Length: 516
Image 1 (cartoon, helix red, strand yellow):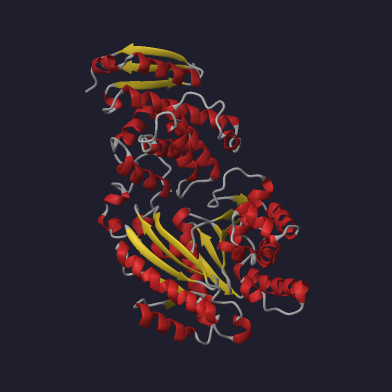
Image 2 (image 1 turned 180 degrees about the vertical axis):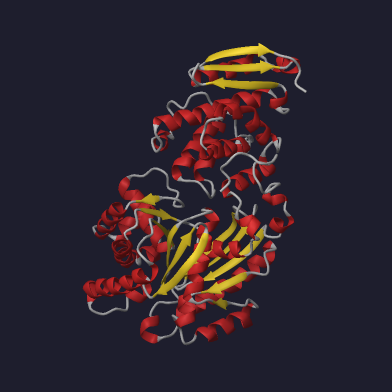
């Protein structure tokens, strides 16, 4: 991930913004159909290829794999619903200019005796060729989806579907060992002997998986609808205020408590509290059994939820290696600036102007300041009275990869202070508490620096003035060129002094010669 010092005019060793690259533009609208054991989904990705936006997303809960263990065949009602959904998806994609679709089918279709017949029917009825992938390929693609959001990810990816559960190893941004297992909730429903028999079966299979994959994985990445449902319920139990599932973190102890808490409530009550469908919630108790044993067998120190999985892995599959190595946050911010800012390109100039404030900052913080500068003006169309709130809401809830929840809050606060001096009395206060006072203050300083720089000049501010920050002396000096002095009006001076106050520094203004 690009976190070090800028090596070119565009902040990194990879040249111009990704969306200017013809190979990236070719990926600007990609349609994927995922025919799973429980759901059938169409996703159309649009925008900057390295951190895509979801242009269209539709899911039908077909339960193709329901009863498969008993009959050996696809659920007839589910099969009819899936075919109708795929027919609709093909027509939708044609209207969006997203053809040809990439379509894959997973455990239910590959295991059912009528799976080949269904695949042929789909092609005959819709013209769409359905690729039936094996378990290891499913695991590999899911792991690649995780890499879309976490370049350089390291740990164990666990993707649970309706009829299977896949594991994949990630080491330094590369996919390693992969394996598939029959631990999907739909398949576990067919085990006789009650809950005790299910637990014994899950334990035996999981121990075999641990022997194959090793137990040395510090981080566990959870992929799949059942895991996301458990994570959403964990948020509900904890009273966690930011309902963004991607990059949500849980501890093994919290997961154990949540699984027990789920068992103490009616599914209808949980649906009312979280909005999760009953079709999804009905699989959660069995998924909870699997998850508890997964934690016992692999003993990860950290658990992270990934909203990116197989479908995003198919997009990642089509990317050249040079695109894969780009920072998803910076690329998404660049794309947003190019599309929505009043003066695209000014974010980079703003960063270079305020960069002296962050000379000693670690690379990860500089990366966040860069992202903030790129995004500082993308919500300018909002009503001025609400612009600060819209900025915060946009940063914390937008579909951005490469961001922890704490970084989302930091970025939102920085952008809030781009438009507003104080955050006192904000309705977002419960979210602010997710980061400590020191990081809140760092975000405020960044926001007030952007607020000053953006007001000072609509040209390149670094050509008109120079900032010097002396943290030990607590002195902030602004040296103005003659043209810069003409731009240093009353409002600009007030914002400069507000920045100095946030730094707890003396504000010094000097007049120098024209820079050239």
